[in-house]
Every structure is written in C-alpha cells, then in structure tokens.
Length: 351
Ligand SMILES: [Zn+2]
Ligand SMILES: [Zn+2]
Image 1 (tube, helix red, strand yellow):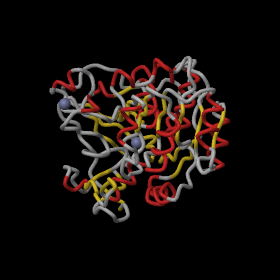
Image 2 (cartoon, rainbow, N blue to C red; image 1 turned 90 degrees about the horizontal axis):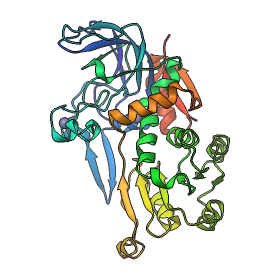
Image 3 (cartoon, rainbow, N blue to C red; image 1 turned 180 degrees about the vertical axis):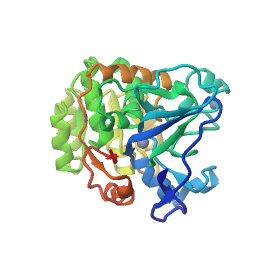
C-alpha cells in the first residue's frame, strides 16, 4: 500500500510504500476512497500548538510517535476483516469514526470515546487515511454512507462531527436565538448546514475574508460581518436582534475570542472549537459579572456521529464545497490550507 507520511515534525510529508495491511482480531482493513485534509493535520505535521505566552504544546511529548500516516476523515470499502470482527455488511461504503478511545475507561463506557485519556485516534495516535489502506480496530466504528458521495461523507467524521458536537452544547438556544458563528471555513459552513437541518434560526457569521463571508451567506447565514469593522459588535447585535446568547468560535485565535466575548450577551455560552492558538484575552472579572460560560468542544461522540450520519443519509445536509486531489499531492494541499487558500474542504481521492 501507498501512504503519505510524517517522518519528522516540521518537515514535508514523504511518500512511503508498505506491505498491504493484515487485520488481526476484531480489526477491519479498508481500501481508502476519500481522505479529508484537515487544519488539525497542519498542527500534526508541524508538531504542536501555540498555547500563547511563548508556550507550545509539543506532540512529541504527548505520545504521538513517528512515522505517522495522518488523515482522520476517511471513507473506504472493506477489503479484509479479522477473525473476531463478527458479521457485518462488507459490501457497503463506510465513513470511519476516528476519535477512538481505550474502550474500557469510565469515559469510553459512558459513550464519550473522543474524551478518553488514552486516545487511539486514527490519523493522530495510530495511522490514518492519507493512504491507499487504513486499519480500523472494530467494525462498530464504520458508518454506512448510503448514497452520499465519498468525498462528501469523509469530512463528516471531523468537520461535520465537530460542528455537530459544538451545536449540541448550545442546542437549547438554537430555535429562538441566532447563533453567532466565528469563522466561515469548512467547519463554519458545515455548521450553517446543520443549523438548517435542525430548523434553527439563521446564524450570524463573522469572518475576515470577504470570499468566506459570501460562502456563509450562501449557506444560510442571515448576516456575515467583517470583524475588522470598528462597529463589528454593534453589527452583530443588530443582525442577531440581540446580544447573542451562544457563540461558537471555529477559529480559536486571540482576536476572535476577544470579539466573540465582547459580542456575547449576559449569561451567554462561548464554545471554543478552533485551535488557531494563543492565550485568553479576557478580563477575568467580566466573566463573573456577565455570568458567562466559556467551554470547549472537541469532535463528538460515536452517538453524535450516528445522529449526524442519519441527518446526512436523509439528505438534510447539503454537501459543502469539496475539491479532490491525488494522494501524492497531500503536502501541496497542506501548504495551500496553511496559506488560507482552500475554500470548503480538500479531499485526497485517487479513484
Ligand atoms: Zn479534522
Ligand atoms: Zn477510554
């Protein structure tokens, strides 16, 4: 099999050729038909996150071993299964749930595998989908894509699920209040689709890029605001008809966290999803005085993925724009993503 591999943090990916994968125990091997390229992959290739104040989270010290095949948004067809994989339909095309935990701790047993303290995430802690084959530890992580095209289904495992998991955290507000969405990249556009599928009020978007603002409006936003405007907060309030009671920040930069915080209404909830990096810019007393909830959201649970795939198979979500590239172009695609030149989602799909 062929794969595109991180051999050294901070260095370009390299093409590797390895023996075909052989499944053991409950494992399943898929032939990859589509692999989404995610912003997280930039951080993995670079070896860490900027935590602000000159600090850095180093993956090398967090148990991410090299070489590593990235890719956690994978669709494929079953080519082999281990002796204990049990009976399941091997003729379907599946998207893989990648946020796999140990399976035995209290968090995993409660259904929140994505929050396990000893994660085995595909494409991060174990090899993923930037390859012609992927190994999945159990068929329960395979979700039928129905008639959804593979390149559309692949990003559901990450951007789709991440947007859905974030929305679930403010679900009670969505019918009656316009959600503030910061960032109209792949995640933000997916969020806009899901809001429509959930019959939510039209959201207010913020993005620095006029092209992305136009994409947000096309995806159902009631307004798309330029955060560099001196009256951006007033524009957000006018568009939402109030100070928003919930905001999701798909960027996670100091500037977006400051704007979102300033725009949020009293007792509002600020959900941080994006991992751009930096330090919290907020005055601590204001968090108490305004009774705000600031929380994070990371991916989503297998149960949430099941709900999301149901929506997707029922065509409740329109496809987000995707562009397909060859597996061998992975490094170029990552560089384009780093330069902010990808609208929607880039997919590696050789078929
Ligand atoms: Zn991702
Ligand atoms: Zn666990």
